[in-house]
Image (cartoon, rainbow, N blue to C red; front, top):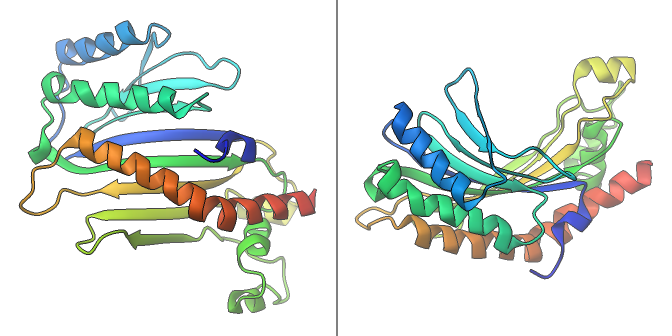
Length: 250
């Protein structure tokens, strides 16, 4: 890792999800056994919650802006870390979860719909997110001409691109910059200081036709890819212009 991503933003997090074709087990013994095994490896993860969508999540209370979590939903299992101290720390949790899912949740290569690895970077800004995104990424482009129209300016601007990283399109990259400013804030000129601009980078792997899907092998490949993309493409071409635009408005 050539840069510390946390030093470039206000919050940095890594999320991993295995999306499945079949519904995952929902019985009490299986889920408790799975989460208890994680808790034994990571004793600080001792709080188990359930939301209205039947997603169970094991995590520890946030301390100094950090958090570890692992979850089981109807058709996906995930894990992640908020503001990790190192990639060994976050990837260690993800790999441990992936090592459990075959024999504790019955997930194998045939059952995998896709494997997602996401880097998220939050940038605090108490103003119109759309204007920041327009300044950082659309200045000098044909789109900039549309922002000069009479009125309050851009209302919804959350650009997203999806790019295939191989010939069969089984490996894909998704980049999005998410504005959380709504119309009521634009009309009132009162902006929520707690809503950040967020950059998401996801590398998704689909099973290849005729090939056995190895979850751990794929995850390791995706880790290498996403870090190369961050260092070579995302930081210089997206993170730096975004932080410069925010600094210009402050």
